[in-house]
Each structure stands twice: as C-alpha cells, then as structure tokens.
Image (cartoon, rainbow, N blue to C red):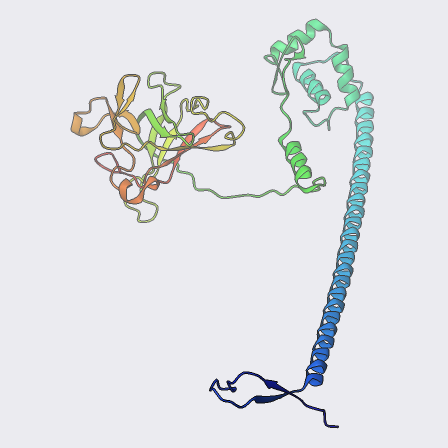
Length: 387
C-alpha cells in the first residue's frame, strides 16, 4: 500500500544548491515512516536493556551460587581439619596413657626387685644420692631407680650426710649448682625442644606431632694462618654510627687472634681469601651501637661493614687518629720483626668501582659472642691484607 507523500514549499529564493532563483523549491518527506522508525528503535533499545538486565541478574545469581559453594567448601574443610586434629589429639593422648602405664608397670617391677634385694636407706654413696636427686627433678631417666625409692633415699638421708654428699659432688646435682641442698633462685632454662614445639603450634595452629632430624656436612678449617693479635675494628653500623671496637692484647685469656685461610678455594693459590677471629673475648657492646633492642637482637646479627675511609676525612676517636678499619699487632720481616700495630683500610683499591660490597660485612653471633667477616674483596699475601 503506497503511503501519501507530503510536500512543502520553501519561501526562499535559493534552491537546494544555494543558487538564487525565482522558483519555489518543493521536496517530499515520509513522516509516518520516520515515526515508525523511531518506534522501532525505541523498542530495540528497550529489548536490549531488558536483555542486559536479565544477563546481569543471571551473573549476580551465578556469583551468589559460587560464593555459597565456596563458603560451604570452606566450612567442610574446617570441619574436616577439626575432626582430623581431634583424632590426632585423641591418638596422642591414648599413646601417652599407654606409655604412662608401661612406665608405671616398669616402675613397679623395678621397685619389687629393689625390695627383694633389700635396699637400705639412707643413701649409701654420693653417686646414689645424686641419682635420686636427678630422678626427682626429672633431669635423668629412672630406668634403674623408681621415684618412690628416690624419694625415700632423699627423705631418709640426714642433713649432715646430705652436706657431705653435696661436698663430694662439689655442690652439683646433675650439672646444676646448688647450695645447702637447694637450687639457687633464678629463672630456669626451658627445654629448647619444648620451645620449638610451642612455636610450631603457635605458627601452624596445631601441636607438633613429630621431630625431623637433619644431618648437614660443613667444611671446617683444621689449620689456619695466624696473622697477629686483633687490636681494633671500625664498623659503619646500620644505625648510622661509626663504632670502634677495641680488643684486649695483654690478657692471654682475652686475646683475639686474627687468622686467615691458607689458600684460594677456587684456584688453589697460596693466598688467603677469608679472615677469621679466633679465641679470646669477642663480646660487643651493642648498646653503644644502638642495636640492643628486640628489633636488632637475633642469633646472627649484621653489625655493618668495615669503615670506609675517604680522602681528606680523618677519623678522630678520643683525640687520637684511627687510620685503619682493621688494626692488628704482629712482627714482619720488613720491620726487622719488631712488634708493631699494622692497620688495613677495607676496599681501598676497588671501593670506588664496586661500592660498599668491596668492604667485608661484620657478623655477630649473639648467643656465642663471636665475630666473623663475610664478603669483601680483600686478599692476604706477602705485604699484608690487600684491598
């Protein structure tokens, strides 16, 4: 069916192309078609919007189902772990009960044997008294003496005899110094194994059930080259200080010896590549370095690198100029074997090119109060410590 076309006259004397003319320009417009097109586009947009809404609703429901499934899986896993933990705990308690019963049975058997032999109280010797004390304190296995016997030995031993036994034992019971039959007051050291188990439970959230024993092989130098007595170390600490550590060179028990490895581990050349501090008093005053709080204290501490000496910047300590980051006392041929303090500046040759890594790092073993060096680019040869 043909649609009626509408015409419109334009009063301008310009035609479509803009040229002046006296004729009126007539053009045709399909109004109903345009209206139908607009309606069609509106319907299409509404349909597209409805489809987007349906898709979004479907995605939301899918995500909710996935979240619900994830939560259920998490709850099931928690329940499974809890059941497993409770089963392991019941098993451990049952094993503990069995072990305790076995120990009690062994105790009764040993006690019967002792009674059959007719043991006598008080203690007959210092060794027997010491064993009884150790059994009662729990620091010794009592496979050969039950607790009842140990308690009876201790209770029935007179005070004078106890004193005599203590003197015979030099005041020690199982390695613990005591006076008058009593332990000195003070904080007792805990069993390291118990501490390890406690930290494992704190870290993992459940008690430790086994102990892993690992054996490692390490190379240890049987022979080192003694270079001299260590006099001084100058360290640039991480706290921004220049720390000077002086060592005793007169008391034989406190002297620290500066030593070196005998050859290059890679090439085998007779040249030292690792310095060691051996013997003596190596304890460091961490408070003066600002490293005595919990943030710094650990088994092996980084005290910093050996001091970097810059040109034109002398280091003055207590009115005295310190010339080297390592100072040691020894005798050398080129000084007619006179006892002289020799000093060495770490990284003096390659420090500009390599940077701080050319200077060794000073490591402190806090538990054993020992020092060591790590890294650096120095060598030990005929002139002395180089670089």
